[in-house]
Image 1 (tube, rainbow, N blue to C red):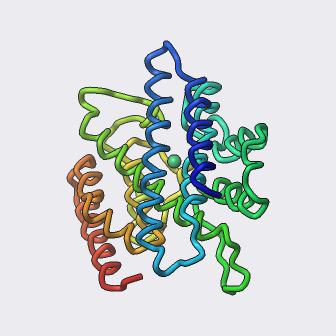
Image 2: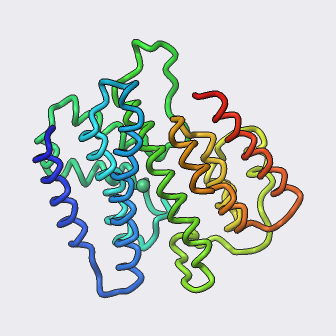
Amino acid sequence: MDNEDTAFFHSWFRNYVRGFYSEDPKTQMNIRLKEEHTLRVCTEIVRLGKALKPNTKALQLELAEIIALFHDIGRFEQFKTYSTFDDRVSENHATLGLKVLKATDILNRLTETERTIVYKAIKYHNVRKLPDYVDENETPDWLLYSKLLRDADKLDIWRVVTDYYTERPRHRNTALELELPDTPEYSRCFIDDILDNRVSNSRALKTFNDMKLLQLGWIFDINFTPTFRYIRQRRIIEKIIAALPDTEDIRKIREHLNGYLEEKKLNKL
Ligand SMILES: [Fe+2]
């Protein structure tokens, strides 16, 4: 892969997304939201990749960028068909994305090895937990890219949602709330998962507050030290907590999450 390929893929992406632009303001806003998210994930993955490069010589930054560019390619078709980003009531947007990519021949510019890495990283970008490989020799090449993508994607989703929680009183976007009821309640299992350092299952979501707790718990699925640094610098935990009710439980998870971040600083993971 070279710079010419990167430019080609970016231009293909731009044209593809333009095909989904709409006169309907709600559709247009959500298509643009995913387009801009994608471009920022490209920036995040390259920044993260550069920070890791000294220790991961085999890492190809151009390939990482293309994975980020295509990771949410299924979102456009998803919103057009179902008017939602909720995979639970529509279909898995990663699988849909793979169908979109396979229906074109654009990835033929890549070698077969590169193509497999792109497909696998996209396929696994939204699973709750990546497969474990105990034996280093069995660890597939795509796993590193998948981990990078998952960190970069989370960094930008956190950015989108924390901006949204501040803006929400002025501009509501129910697609970003998965149409969940905005009541003061939250489900106990999300609190317990955080206290047990576990990522929650999105199937258990019942309220909008549950979604904020789910997003806080993603911190337990972060793979790289620089990502923890960005989380601290951008005050992600504080911003999401500020959008939750002030209760004993929430104060407890704030302590717990800040403690976890401090630990990661010391551990030099
Ligand atoms: Fe994404």
